Length: 325
Length: 188
Image 1 (spheres, rainbow over the protein chains, first blue to last red):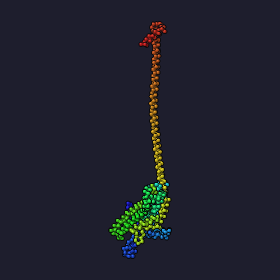
Image 2: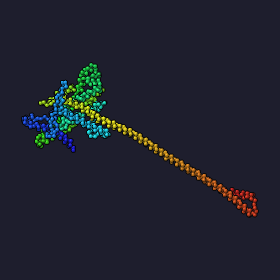
Image 3: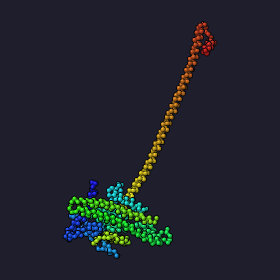
Image 4: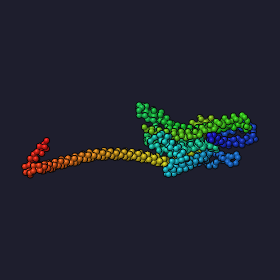
C-alpha cells in the first residue's frame, strides 16, 4: 500500500513519456530511409513539450494509444495596429480545461458545502478540502497582507491562487501541458495583478496615489527636491513594473525548469535503457528514480508557486494601500 | 500593458540566446497576443463565475457558521453564568433552610427542656401541696382524736370515780378538776 502513490507516479511519468517514445520510434524508419546522418537521430523531446503550438496529443484507444490532433486555425483579427491571432493553441485549450475543471470542482463543492451548512453539519470530503484551502489562503495569506477591509480583494486573489494551481497541476498529468509555463500566460496574470494593485492604490490613496509615482520629499532642502524628483521618480515607476515582471518570470521559469529537468531524466532513462534489455540497462533505474523524485518535487512547486504568486500579489496590494502612511 | 510587454521584450532579448532555438523553433519568451487575450478572457470569466458560485457561497456559509458558533458560545457562556447564579442561589437557599431547621430543632429542644422543667416544678409544687394538706389533715385528725380521747378519758375517769365514791359527782366542777389534771399530764 505504501508504494501505491509512488508506483502510480512512476506510471504517470511513463505514460507521459509514452508519446515521446512513440515519436522516436515513428521517426526512426523515416530517418533511416532518409539518410544515415547522426543529425536525423536527434529528436528534441523537450522543446515541443514545454512550448505552445497548434498541435495536441490526446489519449486514443488504439495503439499507440495517443493521437496527434491539429487545432483549428482562425483568421487573425486586426484591431488597429495589433494583429490578434485568436486561434486556439495547446495552452489555450489547457486554460479552458483548467477553468472548466476548477469551476466545476469549486461550484459543486460550494453547493454541497452550502447544503451541509444548512443542515447544520460540518462539510466533509471535497467541500471540506475546498473550505480549508480557501480559508487558509484568505485568513493566513490575503487578509493579513492586504490589510484592513481586504475582503473585497479576496475573490480575485483566490481565483489567482486556484487558477494557477490548477494550471500547474494540469502540466503534471499525462498528456497535460503547463499553461503557466508560458510567458504570455504568466505575463497576463501578472498584468492583471499590476492593474489590481494600481487600482487599489488609487482607490485607497486618492490623489495621494501620485506620491507612489512621483518622488517629492518635503523633508529635503528646497534645492534638492526637484533634483531628487528627477532622479527618483523613474525609479519609483520602474519599481512598479518590476513587481509584476518578477511575478511573471518567477512562475514561468519555475514551471518550465521543472519540466525540462523531468524530461531530461526521462530522456536519460530511454538513453540508458536502450532497445535491448541487458544488465547495464539497470543503470536506467537511476534517472527514472530521479524523474519520479523531481515529479514529486514538482507537485510541491505547483502549490508553492501558486501560493507565492498569491502571497506577493497580496503584499503588493497591501503595500500600495498603506503607501500614504 | 504595452509598456510591460515592451520591457519584457527588451529584457528578453539578451536572455534569449540560450533558449533561442535554431531552425524556426519557437522562442520561449516570445509574447503571443492571442494567448494573452484568451488568458484574460478566461481569467475574467472564471473570476466572475467563481466569485458568484463558489467563493461567495462558501465564504457566506463559513461566515454563517462562524457566527453560529460565536452565538452558541455566547449563549453557552450566558447559560453557564446563569446556571452558576442559580446554583449559588440554590446553595444559599439550602443553607438558609438548614440554618432554619437547626434553629427550629434548637428551639424545640429548648421548649421541651423548659416544659419539662416547668412540669417537674409543677409536679413538685402539687406534691408539696398534697403532702402539706395530708400533713395538716393528719394533724387536725390527731388533735381531734386526742380531744376525743381526752373527753372519753374524762368521762371514763368520772364514771370510775363516781362509782368509787358512790355518789354522783357534780358534773361541771368535777369535770373541771379532772381536766385540769389532765392538762398537767398533757403539758408533761
